Length: 74
Image 1 (tube, one colour):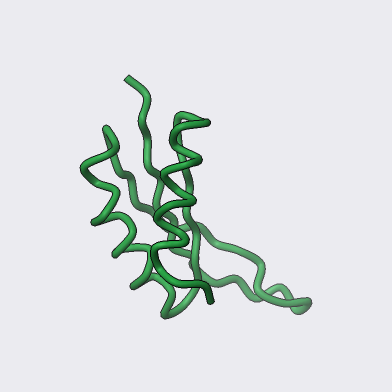
Image 2: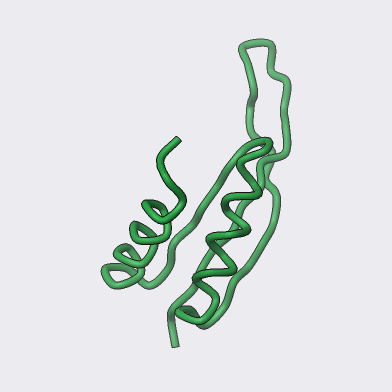
């Protein structure tokens, strides 16, 4: 995994280029995304959190995946 501020800077660049950025992670990486959200919260209009089910393996097991969306639209 790359350093945390690599992802913060990447999210900021995407926010300049697009109106929203979606970060999705699995497992223990959610801690890093929450930290990125805390850092980014002053640069965005809204932050939405949710979970989505993804197909985990060939047997069709589904697992919840954390999702955080930064929205910069006015």
